[in-house]
Amino acid sequence: MITRSLFLLALAAALGFGQTIRWITLEQLQKSLPKEAISVVFDIDDTTLFTSAGFQWGTKVYGKDIVSAGVSVKEEDLPSAEARTKYREFWTKMNNGLDEYSVKKWIAVELIRLHRERGDTIHFVTKRIFTGTETLTALIKESFGFTDLDPVIFTNRGSKTPAFRKIGAVVSYGDSDGDIRESIAAGARPIRVMRGRNSVNLEPVQNGAFGEEVLINSEM
Image (cartoon, rainbow, N blue to C red; front, side, top):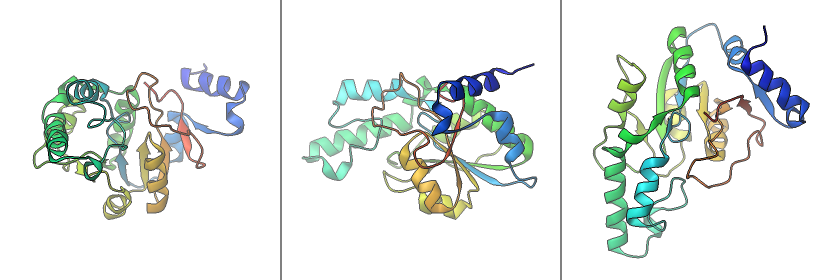
């Protein structure tokens, strides 16, 4: 019987997408992983969680010049102390409550189940701004049924490469071009999780542009 993932893979190839993108199914991914346990890392926004609700609220309340789902808005580029205060205020709320309105991505549920069954060590790294406190770790732990989980690593808009190297990431999942570039720089195997079309993160992505594998059906 042909699975949904294999059907989509065949459809992608038939449409010509397979000529430039290295599509991979969950089944193929599972077979390609090392037999021994490894360390894997997940991005948060649009990879593990669909978090557009919180960012949409923040943009409405604070303005698009202060809040963005991507990395375009940086604190040091804001023109005033008032703007920087609002920026910090938003990130405090985002990391300590607004994620209650975030939704688990189907692909993240499947990937985390796969890696937990293998006995792999799972980490989460985000470019979000850390303002001293966060409930994101507890939310992920509860949402995905972890009994134990290291705190989410916040890079404060900086590169994730040092964090990937520190945790010894062998496989890295992310939706942005930055996630892929920084995974490659760290020596990790990058696997692209596609961003949902309804995401409020409008920064452009180029699925497959770096030669990375792209998970079929991963926008959901």
